[in-house]
Length: 116
Image (cartoon, rainbow, N blue to C red; front, side, top):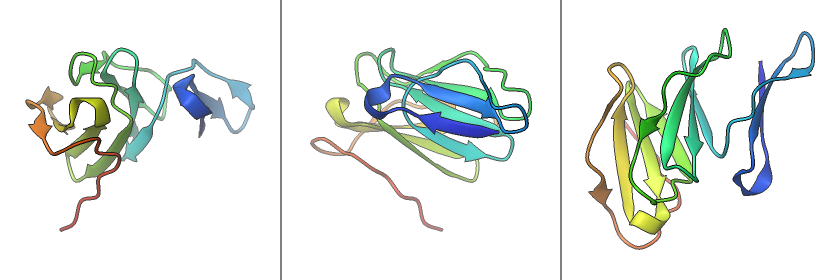
């Protein structure tokens, strides 16, 4: 499966590489862990887990109200969602789907990296 993100957060289009058929569009940034893609939806401040084998989206996970998340990174079973306008990052346990309270990190964070 190929995932293509459009500039400006308009959509992410999964394309089955064997058929080249566009799938259902989902907005903004993507990180993949195993067989799950985590897609950041900036307008509604959610992250949608998508099964990469089937293209099926699970229920979106809320990561804050009007925070405009723009990036995501993964380490183990933790997803870190960067929210520049909320001055926060939000942690998600990808095994359980639990979304933790946002952590204030400073003005306009734009990226995150995890070590160890």
